[in-house]
Length: 486
Ligand SMILES: Cc1cc2nc3c(=O)[nH]c(=O)nc-3n(C[C@H](O)[C@H](O)[C@H](O)COP(=O)(O)OP(=O)(O)OC[C@H]3O[C@@H](n4cnc5c(N)ncnc54)[C@H](O)[C@@H]3O)c2cc1C
Image (cartoon, rainbow, N blue to C red; front, side, top):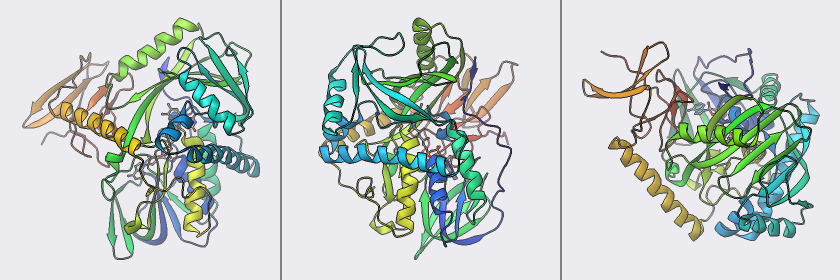
């Protein structure tokens, strides 16, 4: 059993690092599903466009997904109705169907071998049926064709279930890597290992500072999952992070299906021709910080219900917004040239592809019927604001706890000390070798938590991740925390 995502591919085709200063029309920052889809849709435009990826394309959150293409997304529709309106929930429902259509169009057009599989999606309640019934009522109003059942195709607690047939699953990394190849055959250049450290507005231009060069551009599209800048718009205060856990086991049943529970803890299943993926257990990253304990709960729960051999397990966090809708489009009126796609609410396989279409339509001055729904400048509803105050206080508490070093749990292999005035975290590996890091996130200076399963340092406030030697794995930080004694 290995802590590793099953989607990891050995893509040996590495694109070059940016090594000269440039002037272009558009810079896309980040090569996950959202950035690469945007580049795909813009690849044949007559604009000069580049994509800058800090690592390798597809190595962000997109590598850790479940890879479902579905419009049944836990209890999202009743939540959108509560935070916004029924018409917005209906529009979101249609947008997700549209996103599945876009994914299929791309896959069929280029005959992408990414294991696209038509598969039934179940929603089920194993205990509390309230959210399930609200979701069912919404689906009826949306004229969604579903069937009902009292059980899942597998032996697992279930009081009520419904299922649809027009949903899919795929191999996310095979899809993304093929899009990279298609884009590499166009005029749009992708630079890998090129981290963007800063964006400066100068008159009508933006200056993008990478770790090696500067790029002058009229428009910037930020598809970095969590935005790495604080201003404009104070985005870290408007977004929160949810962490989820997955495992993959050897398949020993006949039925293929996807399933999601509407009650909490939420469960997710993806059982396709090859894989048996199980997990969920989403929680606010700032609220419950014993990530290792959570992962163990998932493993133990699985073993209680199934005797399949567990091969891999992993966890990751994704961005959610106050009103359950992604933010896609121009950041604000003063920064029309600065566009963003974030807060996919753990549904970035559909929303990332859709974001690519919306953002490319904006850049090419085309209309897009979903532009308004996801407009980052949209009005906030009162309920959303209240939710956010709770979220802000959670992040605030995590931040203060982190400052007071209250969040240090009982670690097996980690110690903390102050060396020459610097707070150090030390992980001692299985060979008894010490790995030291500076215990302070460069983003907004929080102390870090060590996830002993994943063997990464995580900022509980905004989700930056570092390896045991302090090398940056995931933003919003744009710097390492490596400790070198002077
Ligand atoms: C456990 C789990 C399961 C999920 N399952 C599903 C599912 O079944 N279906 C579904 O639709 N969604 C699912 N999601 C959600 C989906 O995986 C994400 O929403 C999606 O992958 C996010 O894509 P992204 O492009 O925004 O981010 P990423 O994939 O993280 O891409 C962002 C990229 O930007 C790069 N970057 C960051 N900072 C910089 C910088 N400063 N300079 C340059 N590059 C930078 C990163 O290296 C990264 O490659 C799941 C999420 C989780 C947590």
